[in-house]
Length: 350
Ligand code: TXA
Ligand code: MG
Image (cartoon, rainbow, N blue to C red; front, side):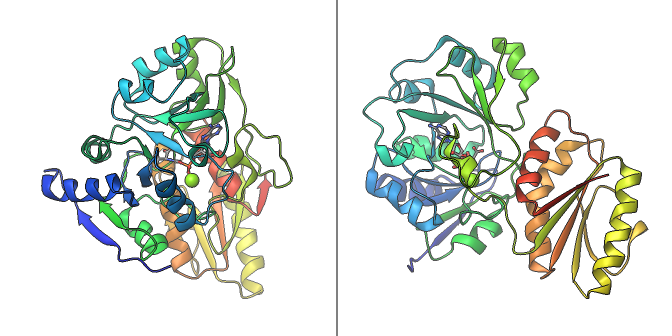
């Protein structure tokens, strides 16, 4: 598959001619990657089967893994679902536009390919201005999974999208680095008590403040054999760099000591090691490629740099990436742990 991939650079000025050109590719059935506040998405007209099939092909994504449909208004959303449950409506009032994806029962407008054959559809109104402009100017709801090759870490910059999808899609809109760095929280509102299917920036506590009790319907493992998981995405390998990933969880001091032991052990075996540490990597270790995922008390920094760091260390051709899991698990920290545990080949608790 070789396509000529156009690249548009969009600044704060929201260059209208470029946005119109990118939007036209979308309304004509093409595939365009664009920034959102969470991660970059690979968009296509959600109501056009052929366009949506191009997304699956470009990403190498399994056909039963449904896509999120991005809208620019409540009206766009209303036209895709059978009804908007009361609790979904409250969530929209509070968190849209923003990093919350809401699952509702779909109507016949939405083709099977978009929902992986499910009767439900996942919908999100993004906050990023470029994303909103593209939806408005194309005049279509945009199906958009993260713009990475299936199984790779989600892209947080246009360079990541270029590395994975250049030559496989019609265009990339470069709007700089994203602000959050992890994908949206996904909540299913089709049952009496809504269920969180993927953790993200909007936490369980914030959701409960808005609509009362919610359940957790995800765990931090991958379920390769399972056919009954509620969100098909849970079955597949996620966020995997080329290198093996070892996650060390616990208190900072214990984690640092364990990582020192691991380093000694692995360097005796001549492995090239990459480290993702919370603070001052150089202070503790030499002889390894290192990357700081920020202050351990500020999980939003880890959120923003996790995928970036996995890709950064992969480019250094390390054999193993050791991740310091001593950051705060509260708030968005729960989502960071979810992603890094899914990425890990081995988890050590100290
Ligand atoms: O932040 C985000 O959500 C980004 C940006 C681009 O908006 N998008 C994103 O899409 O992360 P994707 O396709 O990588 O993840 C969508 C997740 C998958 O785990 C999928 O299985 C789940 O949402 N999903 C989508 N529709 C669903 C449905 N109807 N029922 C259950 N799970 C659904
Ligand atoms: Mg994804």
